Length: 236
Length: 349
Image 1 (cartoon, rainbow over the protein chains, first blue to last red):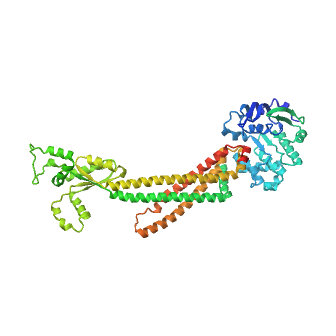
Image 2 (tube, rainbow over the protein chains, first blue to last red):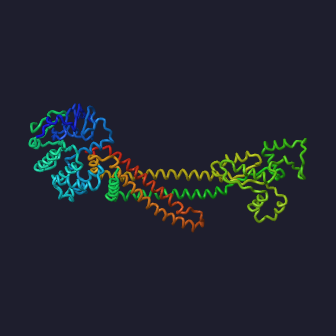
C-alpha cells in the first residue's frame, strides 16, 4: 500500500503553499490550500459539487492562475510561469476527461497518435508508442475503430491510452468513471493503479465513494474551497 | 518545429478545407469577386495612366526666347505687357550708347539670344530644372512650319510672305515629368534670362492632374475596402472551422500544443483559400478583360489599351498577396481569440 507518509523524503510533484483562488464573479473557490503530493503517489480528490475540486485541478493544469500563494508542479513554478511555457508543463502530464474528449472522425489509433503529433514526435515513434499504449489498455485490436463503435468504458480506455502515450510523470483524471458503468469503473481504476505501480503519479477526482474505499489510496477531501481531510484508504 | 510536424499541420490545414468545403467554397467565391474587382480597378487605373501619359506627351510648353526676331517683331507688344523686362531693356538703350545699329534699327543689346548656340545653351539650362523631362530646340523656321501646319492649313499661299519675313522667335519645346508641378516649373522657366514667355495649355494640365488624383484616390479606396472585406470573409471561414474543431483545439492545448501548433493548420487553410482564389481570379479576369478589350478595339478602333500579359504577373502577385495576407491575418485574428480559452471553456464557445 502506498502511503504518502512513506514518500516524505521524495521530492513533491505537486505542491500548494497558501493557495487561494477567487473568480471574477466573487466565488471563493479555494482558500489557503496547503498540500504536497509526492512522486509516485495515487491520490483521490473527493468532495461535493462546488467544493473546489475542479478549481484544484485547473490550477494544477494551469488553466487558471491562483490569486495568492505558490504552486509548483513537476518543477514548474506555476505562479510565475509565462503563458508561452504552459505547453511544456502540460507535456509532463497526461489528462483523462470525464467526457472522454475523443475526436469522432478519427480512429482510435489516430486519437492516441494525436497527442504525440502535438509534441512533435516522428512517425516511427508514433506508430510504436501508440501501439504500446493501446496494448496497455487492452485495445490493441480496436486501433482502426471509430470512437462511436466503442462502449463508454472502451472510449475511456482510449482516453487513458492518449494520456499515457507521451509517458508523463503525472496523470490527472477528472472523474474518469463518471460516464461508465460500475464494472468498467473498477477496470479503469485498476488500470490506473497498474500504471501507478510503474511510478506514474495519479491524481483522480471522483464522486464514487465505493472506488475510494475499495482501492485504498490517499484521499484529499475538499469542502467549500478548503481541505477538510487528507487520509489514506477508505476512511473519509 | 520539425519537418514532420510541418507536414502533418499542412495536411491538417488541407483537411480543414475539405471538411468545411461549403464554407470554403463560399469564401473562395467572395474572395474571387473581391479580387476581380480589385484587378479591374488596377487595369482601369493603368489604362487611364497610359491615356494620360499620351496626353502628357502632347501637353508640351513652348518657351519663346528673346532673340533677334523678338527684338524686331515682338518687343513692342511685350513692352506693353511686361514692364519690368522692357524697362531694363529700354534703360540699356541710352542715347549715349555707341553700339552699332543694323538696317532694322536693332542693336545687339536689344535682345539676349544672339545665336543658335546660345539658344541651345538656354535649352540645356532649362533641361537642368527640376521636373523637366525633355527639351527640344525649335528654330524660328521650324516654328513657322509648325504654325503653318496647324493653323494655316490650306491657306499657305496667302501667307507665303512670311517666308521672307519670319516673325517667329526660336523656342524650347519642354516636356514635364510631373504635371502636378506644372505651374511651379513654368515660373522657374520664365525666370531664366533669355526666356521671353512660356506658352502652355494650363487647362489641360489641370484636367490631367485632376484625373490622375481621382483615379489614384478611387483606386486606393476600392483596394482598401475590398481588402478589408476579404479579411472579414476569410476570418469568418476560419471561425467556422475553429468552431467545428473546438474539441480538437481543447485536446491539443491539454496535451501541450504550443500556440503555433494550434495556429498553423488554420493559417494554412486561410492561405490555401487565398491562393485558390488568386488563381481563379487571374483566369477570370484574363477572360473578362480579353472580351472587354476586343469589344472596345472593334467598336472604338483604338489600340491604346494595356495588354493583359503586361499586367498578368503584377496582378497575380497582388491577388496572391491579398489572399495570403487575408488568410494569415484572418486566421491569426480569429485563432488569437480562441487560444485564450482553456479546457472546459471550449464547450461554452
